[in-house]
Image (cartoon, rainbow, N blue to C red; front, side, top):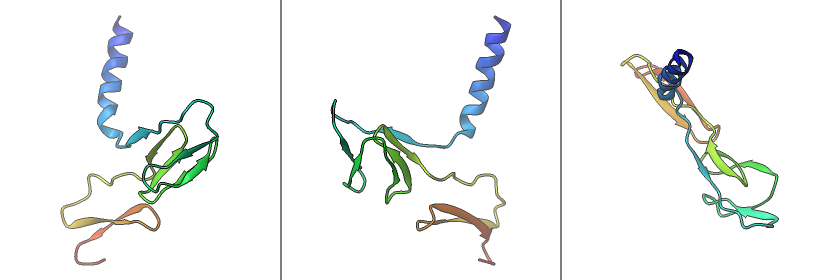
Length: 95
């Protein structure tokens, strides 16, 4: 019982550190393609791709391809580069 309590506490403590976002894609049974809901492009079942919203996708679903920077000093700012799907953090007065 004590082990399960420790495991539950550990999982609850790690939950705020996970900042990914995922959503499923509905595919009809027997389908050979699925449609990306963001870009409306069709992809073969079993393939993977990155869509225009920086989500890594398969026909099972899509998840964010980036992490959000946290815990940086107040004199810094985070800037998202949509071309590379990455955040960069730099000082406000020295981009």
